[in-house]
Amino acid sequence: MLTLNLLNVQTVLVALTVGLLVYFIRRRFIYRLPPGPWAIPLIGNFEVYTKPLLHRVVLQLSKKYGPVTLFSFGPIRTVFLNNYEVVMEAMVKRKADFAGRPASVTFSLVSEGYKDIAVASYSPMWQYHRRVAMKALRNYQQGDLLEKLTQDNMTKVMNMMATEKGPIAMKSHLNNIVFYQLYTLCFGENKEIGDPDVEFLLREKDLINKTVGNGLREDMLPFLKDVYPSGRYVIIKEAADRVFSFLHKLLHEHQETFDPNNIRDFTDHLLVARSEAEKSGDDESLEKLNDTYLVQTVSDIFFAGVDTTRLTLEWFLCFMSGLPEIQAKCQAEIDKKIGRRCPSIADRQSLPYTEACIYETMRAGVIAGLGLPHLTICDTHVGGYDIPKDTVVLINHFALHRDTKYWKDPEKFDPLRYLDEDGKMDPTKLDSWLPFSAGRRVCLGESIAKSEILMMCVHLLQWFEISLPEGTKPNFVGVQRDFFGTECPADLRIIVKKRFK
Image (tube, rainbow, N blue to C red; front, top):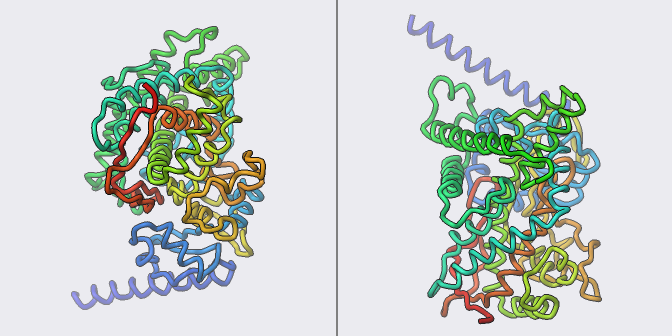
């Protein structure tokens, strides 16, 4: 009996192995797939996806295999796009083909079952919610709310920074700058630093980010969440439940005090959209704007903007403190065009050199080396290769921002790359600059992010001379922060000195 059982197991294993080989050979025969290193069936390119700084590893491998490179993450087929031409072909020319998002247990947990915009897959429902969110953001930007809250929040935080003695670890100050600003933008309340509600959301966000790490085992084997959930899965689920319970409470409070003649924040702008659907008798739109979808849309703007904005500011301070001559040029421009008054969004046109430094920060600082994964929603192709339906596709932003075809000496921080001979920003010099992605999945908050980051950076340089501690050498090499290619400056500590009394 034991021998028979062993034979049965061996037969199953042989059949499975042969079946997998036939499957992979058949796929290679039917499709002209992109090149890449040989992958072990089911296990995939273990020697690739287990290495740190994956975006850098893939860039090096793309020099051998080309700009469209195929890897297997376990059984999941994944294509990396490593230059501007193939990214534009995929995301702009064939934009709908690549507009999906892969399903994952982690994505489902942090979106109440894909009810948001960031990780929900491409569909008429997704298109509707994105249109509503874009309209709300445009309406928000038409007034001076963003400008005023940036000025107020920056003044609070910079007054706190001015009291610091010696080198400052900037993380807590940058969290205050970004988190409190986004809280006010989304929910209207101008909270004081240290407010328990804001601190609660900040702690829960950090807990989720830390626990997710490189992903959950449930992402590879979803059934485990129902039969044997991991400790990390339980932590993330409980934290997400706490966060969304709190956000639903805030939405309910907004509904009770909503006044269409007094729009206070982004949440109110979404309630305007729901109010318009109610007045028009559009039951289908009303169903799409239920409380869960509204909470998730606000959550996208709030949480998605926190880390990217904070990391941009962190890298900006890293470059400015390490390159005092560039910092001085920015401050000379700010002094000449603005003086000591509060900067405004309208000042953007008058500060081309400072804006160029921010663009260069987004290129040279590795803020999103890979970004969120795309998924093909049909059989398609890019770069001369077939990309089957349900293929995960990642843009290697790091590779684009280091491409010597577009960036001479790419490791050098050089804001002049973006300026014309008259010293103005030159939009023709932005090929292969894609920190906000492109196509259907371009960052929802790009327009707000550019304006608020510029204002934040101008405030900092207007108030402070920023330097490294004595004896510290500039270090522009980042350290890995997460699986999606985010790097942060290594152990950044700076000294701030007020420029004016």
